[in-house]
Amino acid sequence: MIESHSRAEDSVPECLPDVGCITCSDEGVEMRALEVDAASGLAVCLDPEGSRSEVDLGIVTGVAPGDVVLVHAGVALTRLESEEAA
Image (cartoon, rainbow, N blue to C red; front, side):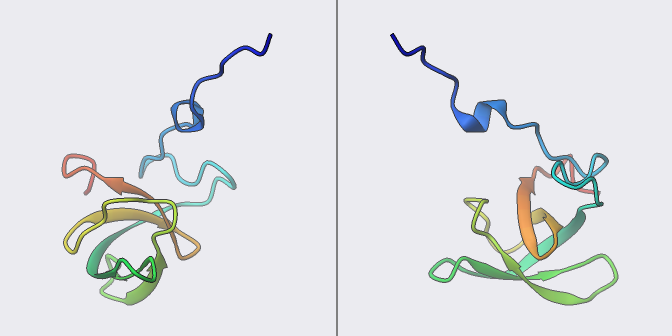
């Protein structure tokens, strides 16, 4: 008999700004979504220095303009709740 396993998302460590990327340990950057194109899965985001970048939202759902996401290598890792965002 095959044992049931927990869902993959339940076993993945939570990404937090003070921890960084869980894959390579590089620092994630908090960025605010300015524009979101749900059809392409991309967003234009603003970093803390005021630079705009295109960010892939492929692994994060529910991002809307104004939301803050933790970004590494042009990919949003998680959407941060308001109390997590600096």
